[in-house]
Image (cartoon, rainbow, N blue to C red):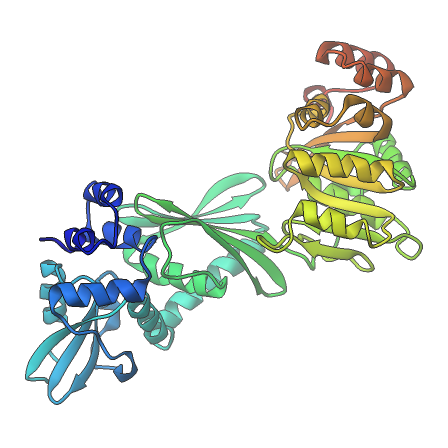
Length: 460
């Protein structure tokens, strides 16, 4: 009887779960999946009963003269020597190949008997991390990831991609919008590097089946780290959120002088809705922050909801979204009780946020936000998709800016190209009447000086 059949017999898992487990290829996959239903310590007790192997006394751990790097990919670790017995902690006593390797790696240690004990996967991995953190190899790995961060900052990279494959670990940097090769190293460095980064970002090092995200600070720069499970391990992406870098003026972003002046003027309005749209990495946040920098912060209460905060701004009350604690909806409700003049909502993602953003703009507030849409007219369609009444959109819409970042001709960086929709009374009437996209586009190009993004690119 296998251990998982034993769990079924003991009524610790259901027949449905057991059937799913049968499709898993390895003990590790099954062990990890069972953790969704059984606490790890309880699972260890059951494994001890099933295998007739005692639980390890976790207080008795001691450093032994072995290379602990050998055990990074094994379910076992030397735990302690007591009365000439070397105890090995394991969470998979059925792995015969791993046992052979363990016995080979510890053969230089003086002991008369080798015995196994059951310990949780988490405790084994935490102990390995603790040991490696104090070892020279771990120090080298730490220097490696600090070098990666420093090189990313030096090259103005927006993102770092760390991707494990079957036999190699590939690291790439996103610079000026393009992914570029940085280095490729042996896959054996992956576990230690991944654990070091996850510890830095305060993530669960034992969790590798579910996506995680966290943040850390290095050299006055905030980094956001996210993990995603793949066939060969967790893909890690680190985004630089340089909160302390100098904000860029609206003139230097690449907007035409007439558009820059228009944007400056609308920041003086007391209420309305200003929407930015474009893909991730198109410079929307930079443009919004540049607009906020133009505002009089002494006489206006400017409050933000961001996920995450990308720039720190003086005299602006900035709030970061915290999953499970504060989201955009609850954050807007709270901000509206704080007597705001200007509200930045980092992103409209759902119906309730969309409707609250529009209502906030109706009640004497200037609201700046972003939305996922391909162009300005698409942003109007998105609000309709979120069940915002077209009349509300028409009444409160101040401007829509759709932008992209394109490379400079001298390859020295990127500049923004944008289309700006500046609605007038007739255009608002068309929105209220739910005019077609074709009708909106025809009126905007003929009467509002609206230049679609693809045409703007020709003159950038």
